[in-house]
Length: 293
Image 1 (cartoon, helix red, strand yellow):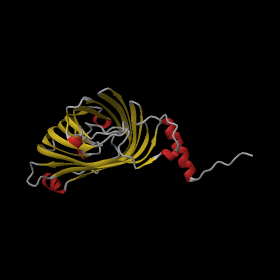
Image 2: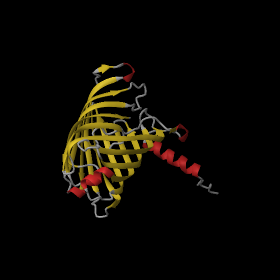
Image 3: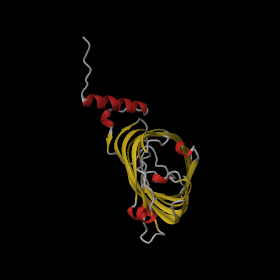
Image 4: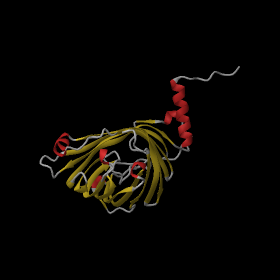
């Protein structure tokens, strides 16, 4: 007699965990799954202006919307829900919850008006095996203009919101990291937005430390170039560059990405990455501070 196959939620979770750990190259069991893990298996993108993190920058922005000093801030995080480790430390599969708010303020206005705020929430599934890592994510974004900015400029408001599916692949080679992939909007408002986007970049993190600062850890030179090309803008690339000094806490666990505090010079050129201004050319030069995993 053929044994019955269990279809309970516990059995389905066990099967999913086994499949994920086999994918990650491990022979670990579901019992080895780590709940609420610290860090992530896919390192945050240094130069991506829409990477969930805590950050703030101030500089000069030139665009059709504003030509003045601008402050850009982000409040967000990527939180691990569960990790299925691989057989090698640092390898595995992890499910996360990531969310952030990205806001820009016109410092040239009498009350430093809020220009725009983008609200992003998603479920990234990340994977690492050796120097290769990947991030698959479905996320939602909605954008809202500031009331004072609307009253002062009489800008026509667009109700921009969408859900998008993203896949990024990444490879580490010594001090360098290259990544690439894209995303596709599953639903969008306005409905006539074209849905495709390519995304690629290159990062450098100097392995040799510049200095040690007590518990803060190791200072090192970092730089990143992030490129995005959206079908809606006829695939014209927009690029973001950031470079400076990064401090990270010292970890005894080679598979854990610890907190990073970075002081960065920032430059952006291309179609604006924020809200309904996606069809406006923008240039930004400033200085930023960012904290991330």
